[in-house]
Image 1 (tube, rainbow, N blue to C red):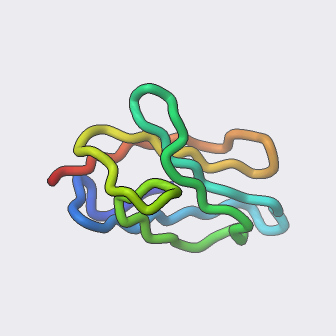
Image 2 (image 1 turned 30 degrees about the vertical axis):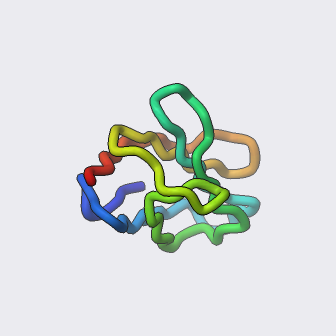
Length: 86
């Protein structure tokens, strides 16, 4: 699990890889308050997604530190930090 570039503005690409056969994968992005900002769902066992710094309603998120978590089913696989600069 990694992202590039980090810090980023306006886009970052998140890459992941899980063992083959893992299903129901997702990546959630959280702010420092622990509030979910964005969620990518129905992901394959490996790949990439692009986050544009917007929340689920399409509003731009504030500059700052965010955490992104990779889930396989309901199990947390890994968590990383990213920095949005404007």
